[in-house]
Image (tube, rainbow, N blue to C red; front, side):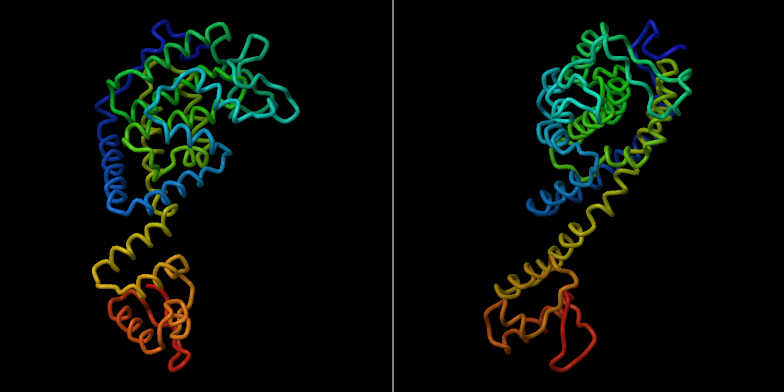
Length: 327
């Protein structure tokens, strides 16, 4: 069966730039809007948002993602990839099976097959390049990845994902490392180590579609337009996920932007800082006076001001049972 890596012109990928131009422009615009919005927030909130985004990846890839994104300007080398692989498999086992960790796969280990293929249906399974080709293939890939970009960064990220996944240089864990490489390329595209959306998390959610599109591309020719079209759409959905993933952080950021329009005194700022992380926490005259170490009269005046400014909202009840929440 023919595979993309057997094409005489491999790895000279092609795509229909005109067909991809509209979705590519749209996703780049959304990237810019998100980065621009996050750029208006204080550094500590951006750091919290980035940590929240990295933590959303539930694939056990924390060390890989941190190194890939926090050090995205450093070259991607074979030794660095070996470190990522060893971190993925610290015991050098996948279940009960022993694997070679931190090194390219050898001729003794069969090329990893497409996980989307049902058991017993091997006829259509993808077969990666033979082990003796890996060192040369990876040298070519790394030279390209570390070189001066000549194509749009999003297209580069999508191409890198497919290219690495097709080589399958490791005995296991190629999918996870392909996602880390993708995130590293996107961090370079964004020009920041701070991550506010997670492509690896989105790919994990679309695992079946990802495997299907990858399999189609790996069994096709060097025109990877359909793969890149899916990749751009997946990235767009990953950016959309940011609204949900970062909702608590964004709400606090928007709250403080509103709060800064008013002349908060030290007591008000102190209480709001403590309460803004507890959106369902109740605030009474007594609790305010205790937190701010002030008299009940001062507490009442402070809370009335913040109520007028829209920073607090009154809950049900009245009199001595009156309580407030951060708006």
